Length: 320
Image (cartoon, rainbow, N blue to C red; front, side):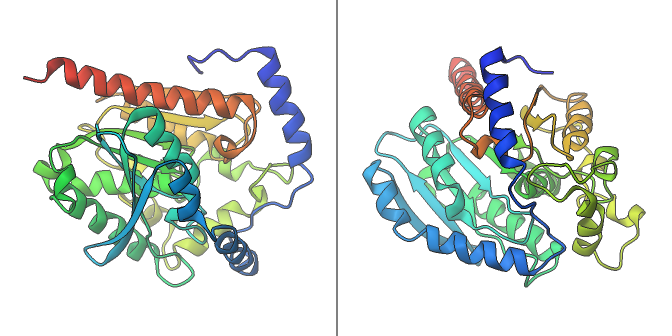
């Protein structure tokens, strides 16, 4: 299901890229050596990241949000809204700077500022610690942590593990209604919303692209040691089973070749019972595809930007 035009050229382009991707190693969360190596390579690739942003006239500042580091990106134009960004990386790799390219594109396309959360990782903290970091940073921002942004609408954005943390943070924020009311929307890319594993996770085979299909159920169990499946499905650990009645409007995206596709389909179905939820399932797209040099990735990012701009225009139209 997608409202975007998916022409044959885009499908063929994605198929060609997937043939190359099939030769790449799969990301294995259960192998702690691979995450450590990937994290080291990631940090090496980020040398000079601030200078790259400066060339696009985007300033970057690091602040502490209730003790949690956040990376704040802002362009030269007046800010229309704030994006609260949760990076991906399977809970074991990544940092806020890894989203610089995507966040710079949000800034240039939509006139927003971005606050990206540098939550702790599973290599040194349990999942509860990561969720604590994300909630603490969200409460700080929504409660006036950056005074210049206090009156602006806030959108939550999360990719992969960041999608899980974004959805879990929204569920927890309902305990603070005044803060929760400031959330104007959510953009969730191929997240994990059932930590016991949806059917597509349990059925994933060795030909899965990007992710280690057969190892995914084991990886989820390693993330939540000491819990049985019933406990893993308790919200907010598994956002799919939380109270979604009062959620903000959302845009959700997943690739048809992603073993996590059922997570997004199921969450969108429940979310859509109480709020507007636009769902896009992209053919020939694996996990992580919005970062790949394909036409379908470009179409998806453009649709995300258009969705956010439409939300801002609708808000402006009813403003007193």
